[in-house]
Structure formats: structure tokens, C-alpha cells
Length: 317
Image 1 (cartoon, rainbow, N blue to C red):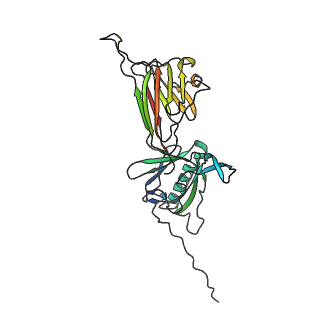
Image 2: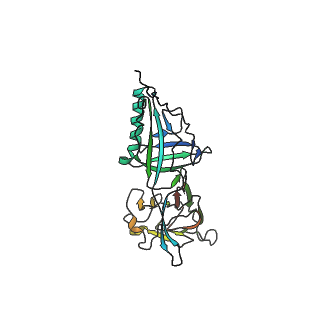
């Protein structure tokens, strides 16, 4: 007696184009592994690309809100804490034959999982106008095939979850503010005049991002005492070079002050953090919008300079 069975259906290779991604739209996406190798994620001609269906985690950062009960009802917000984010990233991998597919599958698996041993990779999103944002990612889970008939031979797909310790996206292009001391003049030649040996000047720094940034400062000598002040809050920090093992900065020598994490290093790698005016020093941040800032270098001469650098941070890709 013949038996009636359900037909065997062989799943076809997904063909969903990866160009239109939720919350991004049309964009080019690249994954950069810890070794610096770039893996295009939206090239349909490649042997791997992102499947648009299922992409998530590219919107606003997650938050935990802490509140206190209010005597008249409801509550009052006390604290807002940004949380790490998770990005779900479906990827199709294929190859001309089983050996090519297997090599591609293994290579991409290593590109993601090596973040757990060598530091984060980066997910970059570039818009059609050339602007782009990136976020540091660690592999969390998901590099496993479908486990269905016909998969794992010349193609398969994985739904990868990437964990981001900093939930904010960084601009690909840094913002740089440069100030340099001009040529000094003789007080009596050709007539009594004054040139500052201290203040490089007050300026307004614009942060075009959505949240605070923690800038890095690079100071080029000559300089003996370095003070940076945020005008709207009065917060400041002073680095007295005489209080460090290095001594005053000579012409062409540099020192770099990082505000997150707090760090002060000379151009030769010396730790100069003891030269800061603790406990009053505040390594302040730059909020979104415009902030008045003053750069002051005691002992400045021609060639003394300050370079402030930061990458704007954004809520979304």
C-alpha cells in the first residue's frame, strides 16, 4: 500500500537585499575586526552580506531610570543611566563550493569571536553623502547555522548578537580645535607693546553630537603651566610641568591629556598625571552645543600650541 508523505522542501538561499536596513535606510555597512581587516556587510556581490530582516539595536541607547516616590503622587526622576546595547545582525555566508563556503564561514566566525580576546571590533555605517558613524562591538552569541536541509553545504546564515559597552555611536571624522601662539615682539621695539606669553585665547567649541564627549588635549611646548577652563561651569584643570618628572615642556615637546580615562602622558610615554592640581582638577566634558573654553599656557613662546580633539557621539546610527 503506498504511503502518502509530505514533500521534501529544500530551502532556497535568502535573497533579501541588504541595502535597506531598519532605522538606517540606504547605507553602506562595514565590520572592522580587531586586526583592522574590513569586512563589507552590504555588498551583494560578496560571499557574505547582511540580511535586512531581523536587524535591530541601531536606534536610541537603552537607559535605566532611577526615581523617588513623590508625596503628592507619582515620582521624581533622580538619575538616568545609559546601558550597554545589543545589536542583532543577521549574516548570510556562501561559497562557490563547500570548501569555499567553509573557509568563508570560519573566517567570519573568527573575525567576530576574536573580539573576546583581542579587544573590540567596529561596526561602521556610512551614508550616501559620505558621513558615517561607528560603534565598538564584542561578539556575544549567534554564530550558528540554520540547521535545515541543504544549509551548511554552499550557504548558511547566522543571527549574530553584538554587545556594545558604550551604547553611543561615534562620528567617523574627529572634531579638532587648534590654537597656536604667534611670534613674540620686543616690548620696546619699535615702541612699547605687549605680547601675551600666557593666554592662547578664549574660544567657543561646538559639539554637534547628541551627548557629552570627553576630549583629548595635546599641548606642544614651550610651556610650564597649562590651564584649561570651561567657561559656562568654571570647571578647570591645571598641569604644572615642574611638578612632574619631565619638567617644563621645551620647544617641540608634547604632552597629551586624556579626559576619559583620566591620563597624562608625555610624548615619550612618561606618566605625568601627578602634575594635575588634585583634588580640585576636573577633567571636564563638552556637552552638545556650544561651550566657551579658555586655553592658557604659562611660558608660551612662538610654536606653543594646543590641539583639542574629540569624536561626536550620537544616539542612533
